[in-house]
Amino acid sequence: MNVMYFAWVRERIGLPYEDIQTDAATVLGLVDELRAREDRYAAAFADISALRVALDQELSDFDAPLAGVREVAFFPPMTGG
Amino acid sequence: MTVRVQHAIFDAGAELNAFSKGAGVGAVVSFTGLVRDTDGTLHQMEIEHYPGMTERAIAGIVDQAKVRWALDGVLVIHRFGALPVGAPIMMVATKSAHRADAFAAADFLMDYLKSRAPFWKKETTKDGTAWVAAKDDDEAALDRW
Image (tube, rainbow over all chains, first blue to last red; front, side):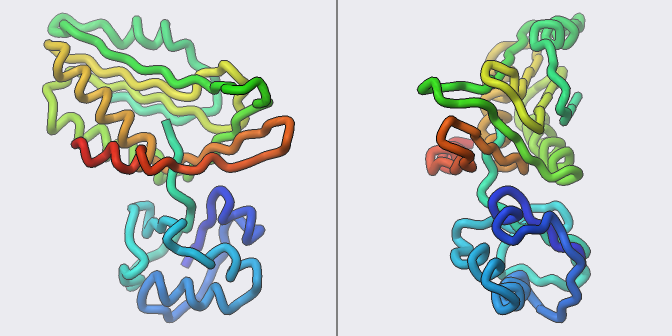
């Protein structure tokens, strides 16, 4: 699936997006896999209460299932307007 | 309904004049947000967004407004990229037969665009760059609706 990062999450990980093969059942499972990869991921996902997640471009939750999802995006709370 | 997500600058006055046309329209409300320099240290504001989700999220917010209030039209323009101090960032306009609907819908749209449309602001000041943190008040404002 395509995993995207925005704002300081993108800066901390050092990538705007990447293709990730995962068997994780939920967003939280994917986060755990990412955290285990490298320090920069562990740092970005240290406190998920400071993050939001979108699944296929719809705002979602960290306990949401990943079945059928093609695009996951992680970002901080939005500051539009 | 018109939604535009763009880097290019826009002329809020010209947009408003064009938007205000319509025989049944009795009330137009608009808001324009500008890059503000509160203490004389801001060099520029950089706005990042999530292409695709941005348009979809704004359209969803506009659809909610259209269900809740009697509107003849909605205009949303939101810019991204590097913007200088004083530049327009975004504008919202609503039109309706009566002012109450136009005011309420514009207020609702602003509250939702602030914390439910995927934009992130980054400020460059004389001290460096920093992402603008979302405020608890912005999230709390959604409870009004």
